[in-house]
Length: 250
Image (cartoon, rainbow, N blue to C red; front, top):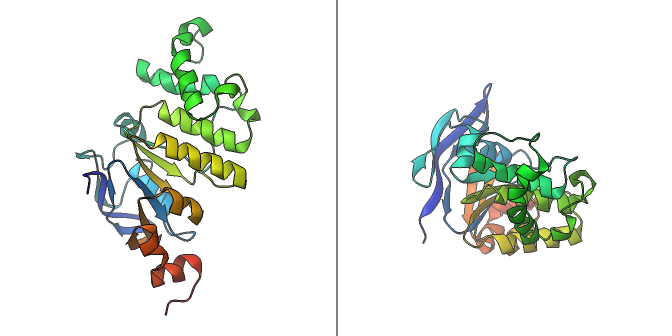
């Protein structure tokens, strides 16, 4: 077993008495694809928000690459190499695909994202931006406004901007949500390509995607961990079938 890159211990988040995430102790091994699944309202996205710093935990600790990151701001967490995407594609609609990736690459200049700098000054990032677009299959869409791209390609662009931040680990929140079958296949193939040398934790509802990509799966229900293991183990677990698939537990 490889060493864990991300761990949580007793992670809990309460909202005015409602416990959305309850005593979650998660261990993600470096170099794996780890899926976080469960029915609606299970606490998956809240857990993502806690791990990436968008929400502070009520209780519990989070460690990334051996460092305690509990309560750190999202930007600082991202600079450490833990970068997330969101359920809704987050791209600058009026910028081209190339310009979107270039904005992310500007992180290397520090905290300033200078939209007003001249095209010539920013062109230093073009070669790497084009390489990242090629990595996600968008090399022919570099000049297209992001807002005009089909939905599946917008999600691919978002993954390219995430890769531009040189992540050691990526948190992908429902990467295939709302996609056609063709787009799902394209994104699955993309994740297979980019996983080399990286760790991925993803929330995903499509069980065929989970089965095809995941090394390990954690099942949440009502904010707690219900089961963990590979797909064969969790898909036959009677409580998982009852909670997630709607089957009756024996």
